[in-house]
Each structure stands twice: as C-alpha cells, then as structure tokens.
Image 1 (cartoon, rainbow, N blue to C red):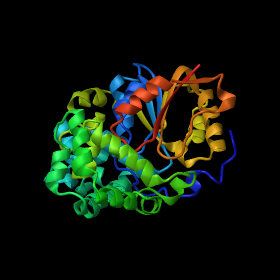
Image 2: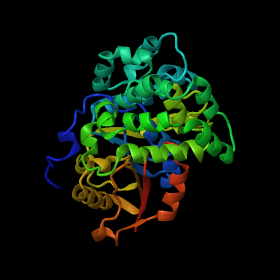
Image 3: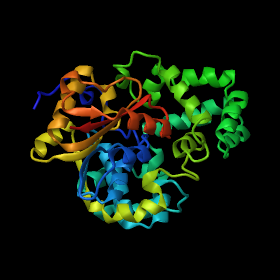
Image 4: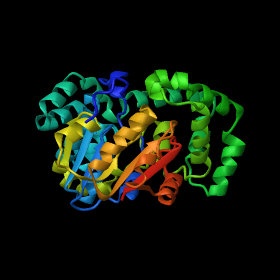
Length: 369
C-alpha cells in the first residue's frame, strides 16, 4: 500500500462535522449504472447514508459503506437503525421529512441498537435529532441560506410554486426563459454559488483546490438544464432546495416501494471508518462487484486519482462497475490503466442527462475488463 499522503483530504479539512445530512447524488442514476445484483459485494462512500441504503434493495451479499468522517457514519448508522425500528411513515417523521411530535422519544426507542460511538455522538447532539437529521448538515444549511435569504430577492413564492408544477419540456423552457431567468437570478446565483462563498458556507475551500474553472458559471449552466429540460415537478433534490424538504418526491431510499427490500437487508450494510487504502488493508482478500465513489476524486490531484484507481482495480471482480461524479474537477482516463478498465461513455452520458441531482458536470462509469 502507498504511504500516507499528506496532501490527502483528511489532512486538509475538518472531518468531525456533519457535512452532508443527505446524499446529493441521484441514487436512481447510481442503481442504473452499477446494476447491483443479488449476492454481489459493493463498496459505497457513506456520506449521508442514503445511497448505501439504496444499494441494499437489490439483495446484495454486502454493502461496505466507508467514510473518513465519523459524523457521516453516525448519520448512516442512525438511518439504518431507523429503518430497522420504525414503520415507513415513522422513518419519514423521525428523519424530518414529515412533522413529528417527539423525535427524541423515537430516538430513545432505537438508541439501544446503535454502536457505542454512534450512541455517544447522538447523545451529544439531541438538538439535531429534534430538528430532523436530514436538515442538519453544512450543505443543507447552505441551501437553507439560499432559500431564505437569496431566493426571496429573486422570485415570489407564487413563481417558485409555478416552477414546480407539471409542464411539458417546451413549457418548462418557456417558463424558464420568460419568467425565471431574470437578471437578479443570474447575478445573485453567481454570487451565492461562487467559489469563495460556497467554499466558506457550503462545502470547504479545500474541496476546490483542484478546480480551475468558474464554479458559479458551471453550476448555473447545470441549474438551467435542470429547470428547463428535466421535469421540475418530480425532482426531489430541486424540491428540497426550493422548499426545504422532500414534499412530494423522495430519493430512492425513502420511497415506500423500496422500504421493505432495504429493511430485509440491513444486516448486510457494514460501516467502516477510513478511506480506500484503509479498507483494502482491512479486507485484503475481498473483491468488489461495484463501487459508488460519490465525487471523492474532486478532492485529489490527478496523480493521487491514478493511484487510487490502480488500487480499486486490484480489488475488483471482472465486470465490476465503478461509478463516480465530477462536479468541477475532471477525472476519468488513466492512460496506463486502459487495458484494465473500459469507460462506458454512452451509458454514462445517457444517465447524466437524467441526473436529478443536477450540479455535477459529468458522470463517469467504468467497467473492469
């Protein structure tokens, strides 16, 4: 294994806070990309836990959810045990999708199921439990600032609700161009989603270390696509950003039709604190059929990305799928690995066009030869 890299993200940012209370990558895209199979072994970046839970619906042998940040693993484990302990409606109430009379009381019901580390974390943060944990990450707070401070200066509630109504694609384009895309939208969007402000309030300055393009311009172009081309009435991520919750449409793991399949497989979700190298050291004989790598390569130099891909390929079965997103820093080809991995360009492009979590510039899907 390679020596510890002092330039790695865990050495540059605070990994003790909840950064993402939800996963902001579209699990529908992920599931179609990986095509998880019954009895398969999958490695998944934990983040908020949503997409690792989504992979359980296919009845795999194991989903190994990993994260450098123990707070993210605490979120994942809490959601896992909520699925075990509660009905579908109670899960929605406990997590913060629906109103709940007493989330603390529900927490005390499932607390006994938690590991000591996770139990200690949430005992110290009962205020976050009471708010509903899907709302308490730094990224979710950033969207709240946009929704409450910035958006009212651009559009009325009437316009926001009109945007979220069902329309044909032509009607969406017309509405965006004639009613939504005004000067205030362009100017305030570019200010709020600038590298400086987003690095300070939304993500972390270090997450943009390898970004050389305009952050705001790139995100604005993707937002335009989501608001004028993709259906706006069925997009849970857009709905959350504009209204503050998943009101009518849920991400994959929260949909009632997936609830029992996920719950049956909860014991197959294993949590691991560490990065890829630590996982491979801990499980030296394991081979994975698929990888959900979120957007972790955004934070790496091209050289570190190449090293990580070499390790991933060593721990992959033939035909394994490797999926990840690029938001602003482009990562894909590694010339010396061309004989080991094929990038499924057409499928990845097709899925990216459907991606409801619209901020990402590209979706990458590789298949191990």
